Length: 187
Picture 1 (cartoon, helix red, strand yellow):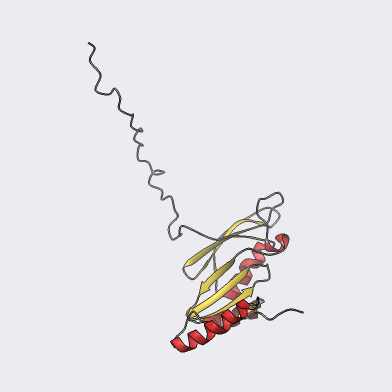
Picture 2: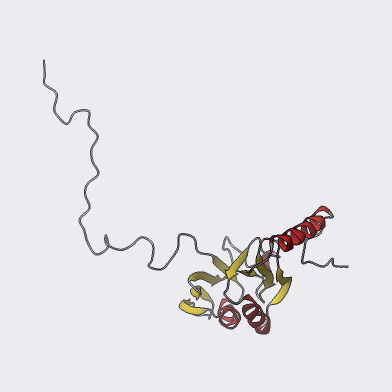
């Protein structure tokens, strides 16, 4: 009878990679989180300037095209990053202007939401839901930027349980009528 090799029936191990400088490169860039919003904008360069004025954004990187459009850019707001580019014909994503609206909003927590709100409105944002104390215990409102993106801004506020419950009941009564708290009916 023939003897079986010790390797027979065992799966092969993947070859070990030599450690090079490329192998030591982190797969996620330093400071980045697992999920990062990426905005498509008609006028990304102008949007960066708006976000600086409205939300105190800092420009991190900008990669322009010969025609002045932005192939890629990144800003930082607080401890978070937002990537963006101009809309490109034939691309698989559209700006809110081209798409006729947006399906998401970006949310910013602030230590002074009233100051942030006023700063954003002064920079050109339009209120889409007024900044008010909400039943879940936050001062919260929504803004639309000049490029069609929706931003909600909030901070946690102290509210009594009774005040929260009264606001919750009022909000749910509006929901039952098909209305949304903070939004006026348009005629």
